[in-house]
Length: 524
Image 1: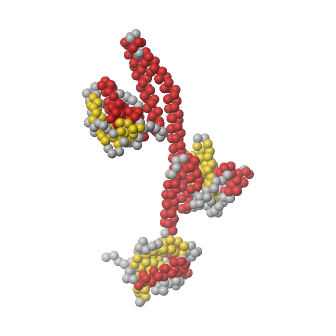
Image 2 (image 1 turned 120 degrees about the vertical axis):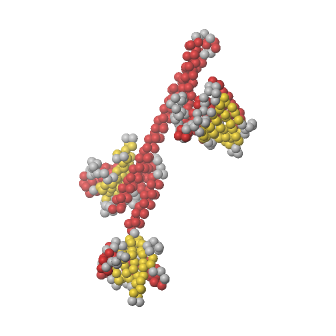
Image 3 (image 1 turned 180 degrees about the vertical axis):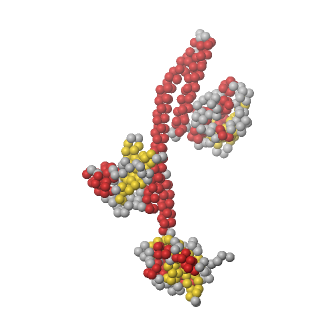
């Protein structure tokens, strides 16, 4: 059995507790006040002993507190732990009010009821909760846009009024320097030349101090004013800053922008506010880097589209000329005068030109699909006729490889609202893909079933099937399951784009070694 602590040691432990431990008598006058209470409330022990507990409470809470204490004294409950009651408020010697949590216990001695309170100041915890909530809101705000200019504007405003009264944001982007300004109230913009001059003046004292790993640095405003040219000095004074922060925006250790945050407060930020400024800097850097990457992606897509335009115009014309000339040479009147070897070589040239033309069209289609400009001209079409016409053009290709194409559906299938040329392209791409992978002597079954809102078309082959790993990529552009496969890997992605442009769905099912089945829907 553990021996009890000596009374003097127990009193010392209670005395040095970080929490405030306060005892009051039946008249709610203070009879004990430990060192924790001294630190929290700011009173010396001799200032509070014998004083009413009210001096530690805000005036607005005193009457309610008296009622609670009287009810607790009459109740059968002997103790209430922290968290069992709502948050309370305390009042320091300097008049500052603060949030607190308290546990209370009562005991009787000599016919009198005493109460002891263990009180914990939760000011810092509340500040931390508010900071986290603020950072969450900031993150959501910064994630709302990927436009560079809009993101810069958001970054300029998010420091106000929590950190600063006015800000200037600078970022070098594609060789241009952007200045975004904002200040309280209502985010009113500063005049650009004045903001730029003030920024140049205030950056001067810390330029060249790249050895600092801290993204947030205090700017010596007085030193900046003394060192700045007259024009810059007047620009700074017009903003009336008493303190300023220089915030570096960087990614992977490389700076790409900076923020100047001016404040009229006399005391520089420190402690929790400086931590908040660093957290804001990190979030602002990530948001701006995402916006820059998005802008670069959009620029790359525009460059690709421009390239596709050149390809479609400057390359297609000579390709069509080759096709036309090869076709003219192979006209019966001309072909009969050609040696057989030469005629075969011309046919190879014609086939190669046709493949080039198909590839050009596929690239253009893929470019339009990715840019969201894939247009379809839908009209009512009998589904049976649409499928039969599309399959008719594939029959020679299947016959050449000794692959049978069979159809299974109940005539008549209903009309579907589609662009017939585009859906014929889907059938050609999907069935053509099945022909490519089905070995000689194999079979491809094209079936269709009617649903209330659509016709579901399925293409099943007897090829080698697709592994689970590869199945996840069959609709990815430029992806091919084998390097030996001919083509650019655009057929299925284009089929997917066309089906989705009709508000339909396309998907694949397969078990490796047992063929593959592709399904797509056509709206009724």
